[in-house]
Image (cartoon, rainbow, N blue to C red; front, side, top):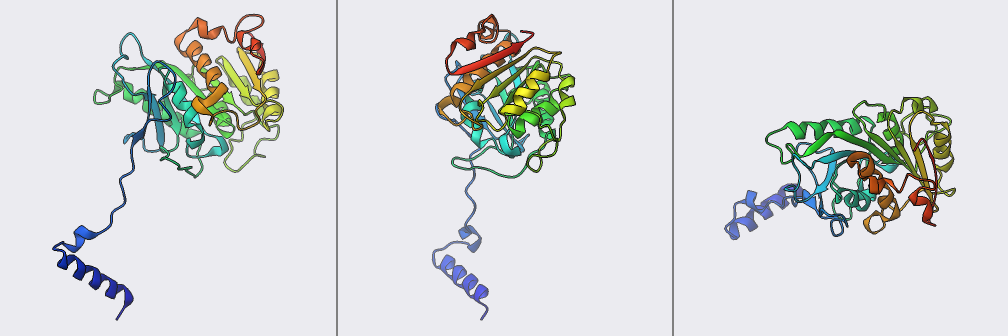
Length: 303
């Protein structure tokens, strides 16, 4: 008798002995959680939650768990995020992104929500960053959405790490964008020489920037250091700030609450997307506030 048929008959017999319909005994895949709190939800005033939204299964959303404080007088700016290695998962960056979200931002990261201990995989594309922005704007207008009327669609940041930084630079010319934050990244002198799937942007792309721009780099140990610093030197038409911390290409994203990189990025977002002048003092003045921190070396133009 065929082995498969034998096993099926035995399984059916067992089910009948137990009084079960054979179809009831089939093992089903456990339902994956569609939300979870990263660490403790961040150190900001709004405990953050990470979500897999049914209306955007290709992305991960991080935002304040309680949306009641947000509405007409206080809205959530949008941050679209691209991952390192062109990965289609933000698993390496969730501590960092949760921390940023806890300060009252809607973060939409490329890639499905990573499960606990899951690293995710696959390649992402720059167009997914625009998908994130389009979705957030649509949610702000959808009467059925929990985010209806709670999103500031006039304040939009694009940001990302390494390959995600190049995706950021590719999307930064979008007229809807308010600011760009490029992390551990910079345009290669030889476009297309990077890993497969990396946006083949050239240095001419820098002339298309129309918003204040922040570079956060990992110092001379960072493989993107020379490219990022070269970008900084070439940018002359918009305000630009570069901050270096001697941690290499991996940054501090996986440290508790995203480490020092999260503090700097959050302050920039607070300043650029919410008009928080106190936060802006980290980047303004001579010397700027961040220059007083021994962990960082900084340069700026037009600020």
